[in-house]
Length: 193
Image 1: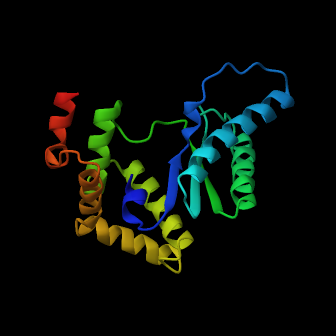
Image 2: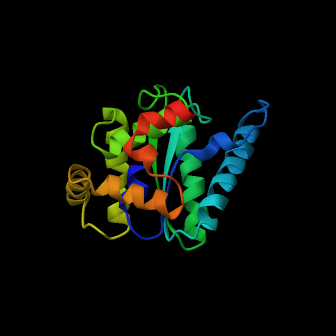
């Protein structure tokens, strides 16, 4: 949430949307692994490319909570998606991250949104904040908004500390004609849901 809110322009960020694919994986050796990764890559990249993004940063996860069980599988998937994006003229990059532990502390859409709002306020769980800062730093450099990740990290921390990150999120919610009450009073969202 944080990175897509802070960076202006057309940038896409995903926390491994591979979960949108649901079919049984039949173990037939490396061929099945190749086909599975190809289907995941094409599904994810078709959505990213359709959004019109000039640059794409993918967070490809591996481990217990991900489709890719090993870091090596995640790297192969990332490389396939990078090649798809680059073939179509998009600056595509990927980060590989471990999903053997849940990210953050909340479970469920409403509670995860509250946690994202807390993170935009600078009071979210440390692991979620760190992931957002890391991804956001990469994105700012990728979008040529900052020269290096150190200056990007300082910029991100400043927009969180000054409330600009949350203000940008509110602006996005307003453009979608949604009520801002859930951002001002995030626990009310959980009560309604």
